[in-house]
Length: 219
Image 1 (cartoon, rainbow, N blue to C red):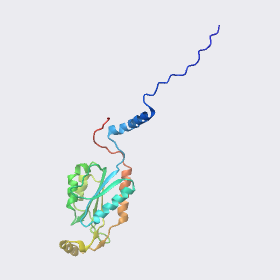
Image 2 (cartoon, rainbow, N blue to C red; image 1 turned 180 degrees about the vertical axis):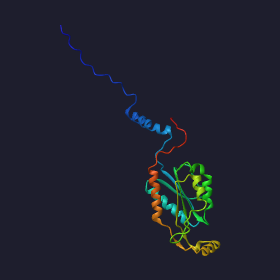
Image 3 (cartoon, helix red, strand yellow; image 1 turned 135 degrees about the vertical axis):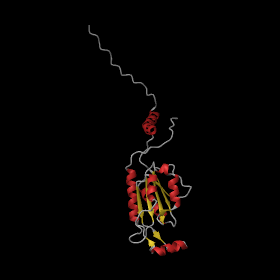
Image 4 (cartoon, helix red, strand yellow; image 1 turned 60 degrees about the horizontal axis):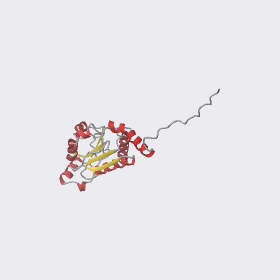
């Protein structure tokens, strides 16, 4: 006697623990969890371009650098250095100063001294503005830039030619430029400035993740 085969039964599928929309939300959060736990973010995106400027020429260089960085997709803030400038929340820094008598301006030196711990832990570039003439003179670095570069662990220091307008100088400054026979005019090389900023953008875009600090909420 032949026994008929039992009818095939469909496999039993357990119901999903979560409805599809909620399931997708949870999976998305889980994908982000390793990044949060390791404190890693993407490449540096927010850049502070801070400059100490006496007659706006150096501030205009800072604005041009920030403009290039914004065009390359970064959040770049250009500010003139004063005691209210904060460094919190920035991933990288470009710091510059006008140069007088071979030195950075005091606000720029103060800024570096006050924030050295943060600056030395982030990518930093330095620039100076001051030489005038064709070719721009003097052609040596400011005397205090070595100490500033060491305090910030700067990637590079760049000297740009500046602008000199006799009518805007104090009497003492006018006497000095006459004694030095410093020529009047705007000697800033905007192509060189933009090219340097492009190099910074390329370096930051190629950078690996940066470490952030803080607590993680799993609520």
